[in-house]
Image (cartoon, rainbow, N blue to C red; front, top):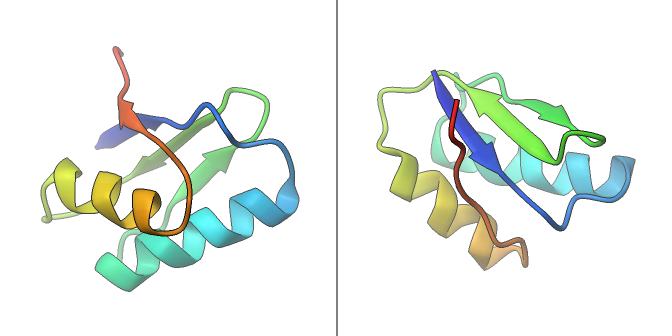
Length: 67
């Protein structure tokens, strides 16, 4: 499981954009966006850096969460 902190999540629109960016990397990832927790959790065979880069491309900074 990959857990990313995304400090700029503020609304459902943000969650939708983030979910689409994740699915563009891995359609099977099934992202779970937590708006209040400002985080995204997903399962994927791809490395976390692929998702971090994809989120940056759509305007959201992110980093691996400490779980």
